[in-house]
Length: 166
Image (tube, rainbow, N blue to C red):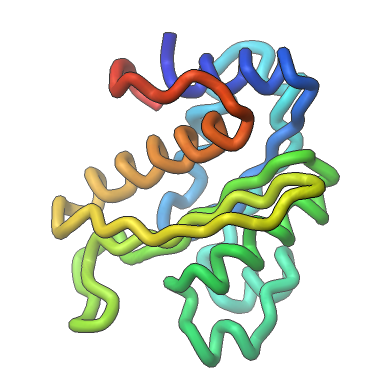
């Protein structure tokens, strides 16, 4: 069973609904979820907000947060997740924003990705993971799998075992 299949089974069992807000993954998290037949029972919406303007317009990310912290920050990741949850009406939302590469800087290196999970009635959790300069495709795949794992964990589901594609 893939990570996405476990996520959907757990969400169904708990009566949860899911939304995603993605930047550097460009829809890979939503694609992994919708690869599973019957995902429409649980997955309500996905927002691909690659530009800052889209983050502001579609997810209500504050321009002041972007100015103060940059798009690749836990602050912006939290606002993205909260915006996706609010806009979609889902009980749970995950966000992903990062630097897949190539490139980056001394302060925000290639492979740095910020995540957040917003759950109805709970504080929004955020974290930063440095996947390293593994190449654009690999960073995006790892970020996808990490986002799915965060959703599963937020539901109190079985942890990912690392087998199978997200």
